[in-house]
Image 1: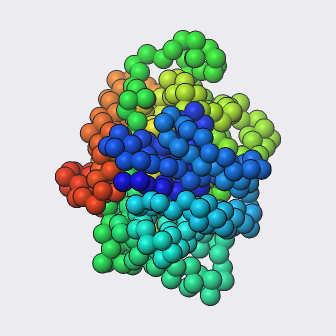
Image 2: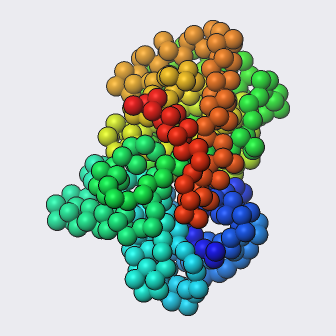
Length: 407
């Protein structure tokens, strides 16, 4: 098949960020499909170039993580307009894959289906409009109703829907029970990341963490990510031999940095946002990874990339997220739940891992084993390809079984 894969925030491993679309596109290519990616860049003109054998079309849509809600909406609408213009000239595809967020990619999919009779697969990475509604970004009741109707329309007209977590799948199946929903979570790149039993001494010196227990945070630093919950833990852990490393970017980062500086939290260090190789270096010196979101019901359904990178690296997981991630972390014995409302508990819960390298290693090994057994990139990429080809996944029961731990 000739497939157009539409992802507004497409990133390659060299660029950092979420690489799911890159690996899924490569898996489709490996099975003999012709795949083209439609995405954006912060340049003034559209360009097309080949990236690792994948043809990528870049549309000129300005976007930064620091954008507020209205600027983001403008970028989403601009992407719809430019995508339609591109597809009017290039529409010899057998199938379209659209991946959210933003939910607005569904408008592109519906338009292509109606105008050119091309079926589409809708991949749901976050629940929109439910997320911005619960965050208070969308308040107008008529707009809420209209967006929810569009969401339902996107699901019902899709050939197939792919959900990244059980909460997302349950939400979609409740809204549109007649729709075929595949559960394909984010992937753990066990080929790239590795569990190291001894830290690289050069990296230990580079990051200034000799004889320290290292807790790291990777990824977006926006309102929904609740990074201040980690900062509060750090503030109450000054007496412990812990270093907190933060590699991220986003609209909330300046406020977080200001708080750290104002309160002289000398156990917190910020690292420039980097590539996947940079993440791997920081992972080398890391003992535990922190995974966080605000306490909003919709955010419990998230399937964050940083979690999967962390278990692929065999790290102790510390999370403030209720829902499936907490259930998995606790029942697989790969980490612990750190309640944001009671940050003083953090020190009590992490101290046994500081005091006992054997206990830490046991949890880290279980973390890597979980990644290999249930979230392998190779296995889930195969599942993705089968979904796009219209086949049933042979091992879907195994995927559902691991998520049932959080039920």
